[in-house]
Image (tube, rainbow, N blue to C red; front, side, top):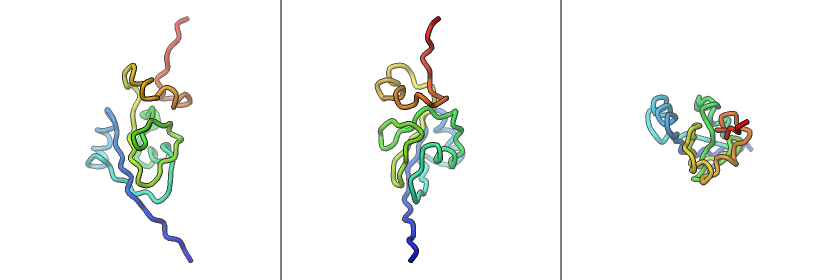
Length: 111
């Protein structure tokens, strides 16, 4: 007996220039993306044609996560590019979630 996958719509948004990119590519915001099984933020970005260097962190259901976090069908997702200003980076948890991400805004140490 084959098991049919149940697909759900995942709500996707972008911040800053990623909003304009998603609007141009998909016509409206939020993008409603049909998913049948979990995937990482990396995989979802690839399916949406968002370049990885354009993403610093993702929000999943209102909480900051790294790109390797699993997104489940029906979740609400937002992609945030590098460049969010100052104290919000720490307050929202960006800095701790993406130390291995090349798009992470690095604090430069003086010599």
